[in-house]
Image 1: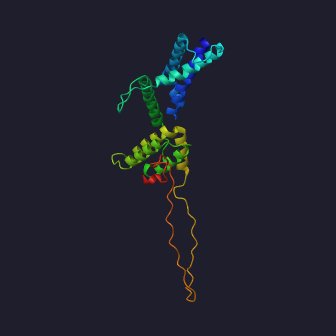
Image 2: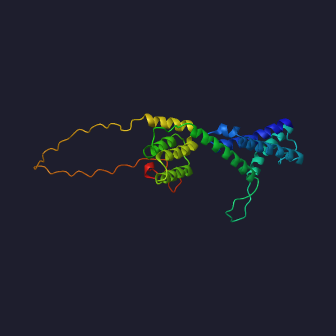
Image 3: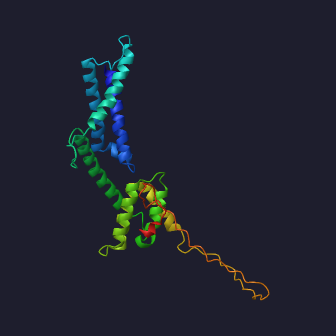
Length: 265
């Protein structure tokens, strides 16, 4: 029975671990080793063990025939206990047609996640303020390029994250009570949550080493030939308007990213 309990705890703990990694993508190891993260995994694993004990004591066979080998029945009970406990812990009850937050077992997990959030936020703030990775950059000049570079490092970009970055850029641009350095620190902290400190550090280094004014090749001067009166003059069509730059930081109504420049936010 001990081995079955350990396997059930492994299934439940793995589900909790996967949820932590998806929630704290920039620092998954720190989130796991924090007291809140360890408690979150422990609660998921313990719930799987309790569910296995309840299923075994009740003698549930899940509709399997009586001739089923005992080893197969144990495997089914372990899987059902691990997955079923994770589903039960994430249940929420709320009145019909009500916008209020539901109550139930999920309230326990949300409370533990809030503990982990507070601790990770403090660690992230201390790590971000301990060294200045964005030295030599300016918010007004480099915030769009820095955001574009960081966001294109990601394979997939969430729509809500794009909206939050666009709203923060517009808000910081209109703040007169903050200096350019203050705005750059706030912008860097938000990008740290998105891509992590190492990616932000390398992106800032790339922008810092890049020349500010790239030389453009001079276009050769062309002289207009003398008009020929013997042949009709062909009219030149007007030039096409420039194509807008693509960006992943603006959203559309269809849930896909709209092709706009981030500097237009």
